[in-house]
Image 1: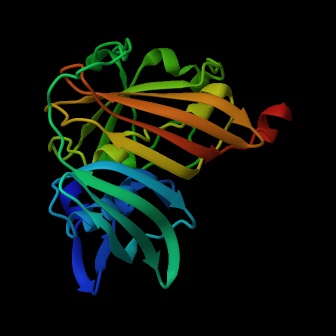
Image 2 (image 1 turned 180 degrees about the vertical axis):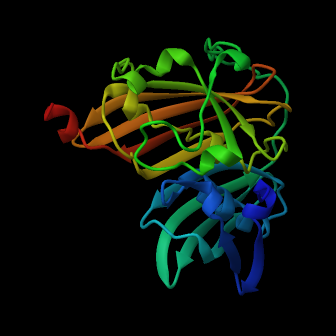
Length: 270
């Protein structure tokens, strides 16, 4: 099993270009996880910046790449005193797969100067359900669950027995299976946990991300992350979701919003 650092490594391959070897371990079914692709792109951006931390990334997913060789090209848009702003494109066999705008800066681990955020309630990690990579009844294996341990709040799992909560909410504890701690570059992976919130609405199947924006606010403390994802609106076979990450010190470390595709026709046909 590769570590996350190994699976997201990039090497210079030309002017503003970096070679990546996309790992099949970071997949949902046969599709690579969007957060993983964003982390690969952010690592390439890191190589073009003097700022050490990922602070924001906004990605559009154009076509799903396959595991294997890919190229990330990076353009520096602005290099300032407190941040570097860049544009990145992930391509495979000459086909653009993902475009992203990326901001690198400096994160702290201090408490917020002001906030309205409160830590959501979730059972202790050991009281939550450990998701296997071959979930019973699932239409395909989820290799991602071998490299990112998910422990789901039992209150969100009614869909497993045909009784979806209809709350559009997923809550889970996450750890990297290689034992490493989370950092800012890995947080886009955590901001898109498995399963999609659409399953709690009785909508079966994959919910591929179309557009995803993440903001990283502070260093996560060592230990597991607590992630909540909430669907806020489902219209015209599109679902809007928001996600928040809290660390082991109950500090909000990142949040995101995404637009994903769903098939509401499957639900209406019942």
